[in-house]
Image 1 (tube, rainbow, N blue to C red):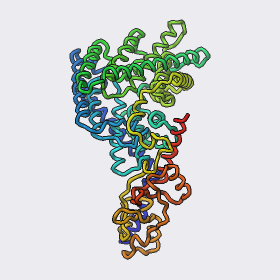
Image 2 (cartoon, rainbow, N blue to C red):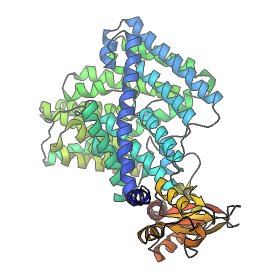
Image 3 (cartoon, rainbow, N blue to C red):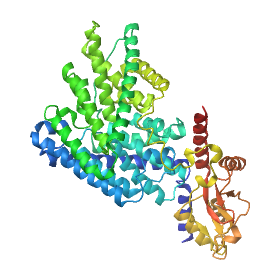
Image 4 (cartoon, rainbow, N blue to C red):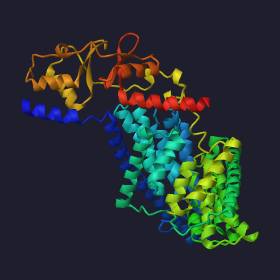
Amino acid sequence: MKNVSKTLFFIRSRVNLNGKKGVYFYAVISGIFAAVIALGFQKASHFILSVFTSSDGNEVVASFSQAQPWQRITSLVVGGIIAGIILLLAAKKVKKRPTPYMEAVSIGNGYIPVRANLLRSLAAIVTIGSGASIGREGPLVQTVTVFASMFGRRTNMSTTRLRLLIACSAAGAMSAVFHTPLAGGLFVCEIVIGIMSIDILAPLLVSSCTSYLVLTVIGNSAPLYENSNAFVNVDFEIVSFTILLGILASLMARFWLIMLNHTRKLLNRNVNFLPIRLAIAGAIVGTISIWFPEVTGNGAHIIRGIVSMNFALDEISAILVLKILSVALFFGMGAVGGVLTPSLTIGGVFGFFFAHMLIYMGVPLSGNEIIGFSVIGMAAFFTTAAAAPLTSMMLVIEFTMAGQLIFPLIVAVLVSHGVSIMMRTKSMYAQSAEGGMRGAFGKPLKSVRIKDIFRKSEDTVSVTETFDGVARIFLRNPEYAVYVVSRSNKYIGGILRSDILSFIKSKTLSSNVIAEDIMRSDIPVLKTDMPLIDGVKIFAENPRYESMPIVNSANEFYGIVNRNDIFMGFNEILKRDKLDRE
């Protein structure tokens, strides 16, 4: 029996998910679940579309094209009413507000309320399934991160690790939605977290690549808008036109963002009228769809049409205006959905229109060059809309597999980003990443305390606990240490995993040995109100300790801080603090 316990202990002592290895383990798990939930979300919205339009429900525009005129209007009106009732119920009956995942990761503590957010996700599935002119990526990612937050909190993850788990889940979800393993990780790192660090980016990419791999097994992982023929010549004239496109696309994106903000302020004032507002939006867009079914859905059909040259200039001009109005209308009326794909659509159409204007002025362009300018316009427009140049560039490259456009894309993206900075344009994600309760990662470094990033731990024992009892705790959860407390939860000392291993090796395993006999009192102790930077210094001065206990002013055991978590959190907050000062 002792040999079995010894073997189990040695195995468990090597399987510790609280260090760096655990970060990548959870990144893989989050990537798997993100892909599965993303496919489930997609299937649910397709089912609703098939019910509303009496079609197969696989493609919004195709389903609306096949549906009768009355069905097109009815689908959007009924979907708006049902979604509005769900959102009204969430606003009236659920006390906790639906925290956006961007807020929970960028400035919060990783806590995302379950009920409020899942009700909004349900409303989004109905809205998207009914054919509304809005994207699915936002609510889908939010749904995935709700479950990630719930899992992390139930396993008592530290704030640092919980936020990273949610970020990994978001990266996996983005990869599953857009089939972009690289851009999925970049999106979260650049837009949500705002810090480009290998310690953060690496697990994000592990999650997004895992999600993409799962998609290849149980779904379709092909590029969404593949067209490797998209091309523009690299000469002085074309580069000049690319610079001009970057400037104009940035200005257009700024107009787009202003329009979204004003429509939301103007139309979304009273929550009690949500069902009526969404029904009106559905009726208007449903009527437009009788002549232009392309205005329905998230705009993916339009992008595919552009890269395949299926649209004439007069047709795409009308679609551009109507698509902008349709998306702004649903967004302004309070619909839950994403604006990423609609933004890419508008940018792509704008680039398409720009290329035709060049032809009109006498610039000879081939069909592949027209597509190339469409792709460049997509990236330049989204750069300003999302304040994410790297993500914009990689998104369109992975979308279209047009790697030969890399140089003009870099030029257009940099120009667009520069113009947006000069105009001080706030991205469409700025509000989600700025509002709400600010946790440790939304504060200046000098204001952050140790208690802001601690992790709860119930693995404590009394001084009279037997050696077998201490060993069982290590078997259940192979932490670096188990801490000894009094009956009133006063901290007394700690038992390191190495101490247990040494007892087992020396064959002194005995029921006569109790916690007090092997307890250490020399483990450094952190205080709850201690500045974070002081805690980092203590860890740096004591490299042998992987974790340390936290106590409050009354010497009561509060929790633990892991070395990897505190340094990761410190580096991120330090970089944020420097950026804010700049």
